[in-house]
Length: 359
Image (cartoon, helix red, strand yellow):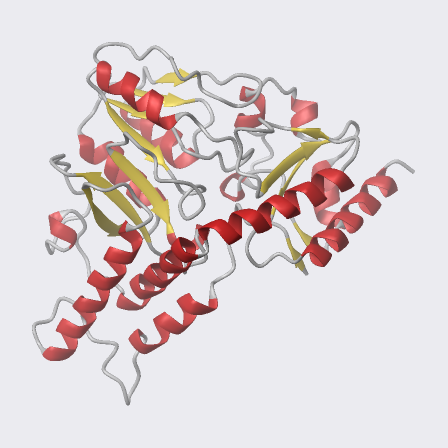
């Protein structure tokens, strides 16, 4: 299968896999030790956690601490619920982890609109009394890059914190300046599933969601996995070293995709965008049917978390698309391990399936 669904998850980097192996342990290894134990093996595991934490921190702004979580969804919940904020403002195209959590806490939740390019206005008005504003750095469905630094300044002027979901941006773009809280996920930066992190600005106190052991500075109780942390740290380290070459590779793939998809309309901004996300539509396409028939290519019609819901994408609706247009859209994602010839073959299969629908 040709894998073109990098927004859903990225392949595990070989370096991450190798880093994890010693900490999986076995009968002839003590790498399985509990990192919270006081004996030598436990201290070694704890040291591995801290090495990984320092590596992950290089993907994030200076002046804060990294709290390991089970993933970005937990990190977002820890940020929103742990902040204690009750008046919330979030962009209309946030991930469900933000939208659903915010709605559960604030029935009067305010949504910040986006324009036809999928962008929140940099000078957006934040109401006085707002406790927390959430704006993602790169949208998971259409790849648009938000003016986070300017929005953070507006939030701070209103006395609010700024939470940034940087899941799709980490390891690809500079860390979101001005944010107070940043959530990221390992499996979107070529690391393992089951681990993420919340970056918390120095001096900011938040309350834990999970209590019972005092781990992670008292913010996340439970025995943590050195293997997952080591994989996350190694993946982050590779992103740091391959930052420029990854971006150059993605730019070439983007140009190839846009050239082959002549006549398709791009959803979202063509300029303020992470180019590893190519969300496009063409009149008359039944995207759901194409996904079921084009089985040689892994692509999606939107967020993996919302797949199977049957509802049109709230992101595509927010940028002004009709239900019909939303259902004629595909998200094609590529990255470090996508070869040009594989992308060529994948696009050819997609175009062949599109032509078959028109017969």
